Length: 332
Image (cartoon, rainbow, N blue to C red; front, top):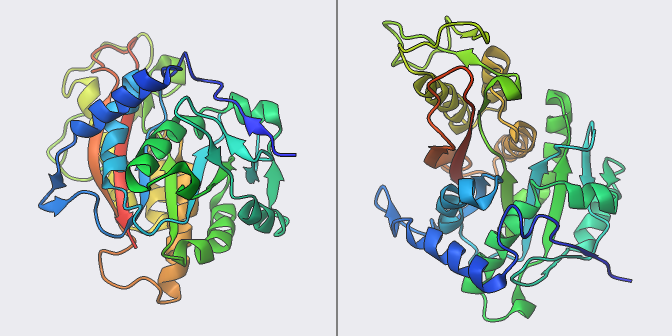
């Protein structure tokens, strides 16, 4: 019997009204230019994207940049990887449902591929409660449905979904899961959507790392950083929001190198609270497997390119907080 995961965050994190939601998505997509750096959108061969998963009033516009870059022309299967916020999970887990509901329509789960992944013995199964509590996967479903509706003639033709919840994986685990997913990533009909917000800054996030200005502040360096305390004087050189921007730029630069260890090293150095660091790490590890197997041709292939960066607010005081949103694509 096929069961359906309900759209549990509809009506709070985004509109539960299909027409309203569809119009909002159309509006945000229309705000993205038709080309980026001279490349027409969607970017040919861009089968991997990183996009945020906050409430749509915060991250909807930023996510549109990733989704408008996404090439679905050959898609027959969509992998969706998101971080676990509530369920403690040392590895990865798949859904036990056959459909994921959205206010726009249902997305079918690729149960055959889920069964293959389960057959490796490396994937847990989410309970319905865990599945419906988690927002990192759900927040991408309306965008995926919208883009599929623009790329295929009917819902019957939409590629099925492979949702994967990624837990608190270490470097070795990310490499292990990357190796499992690499053959799917090598398939030109597979699309990968990676769910991640970037820096969560503020006392309420227990992260107040600050990079002061220095002669080398314009360079890619996190040296001299320290954590601000509640009673510290609010720094102004630079303002906190500029420091947050530098922290995120360092993380994005590390991801753009295409080297998994570079990204992990950046996180160790700054502690940046990139909540999707583990799904990003898994996909970077999978790309590295393909590179070692000479299945990635071209210097820029398999390298993420960030096309949009926003923050929920511009932090000036230590008592303030913000969350960062970034969108990127990679061509394979």
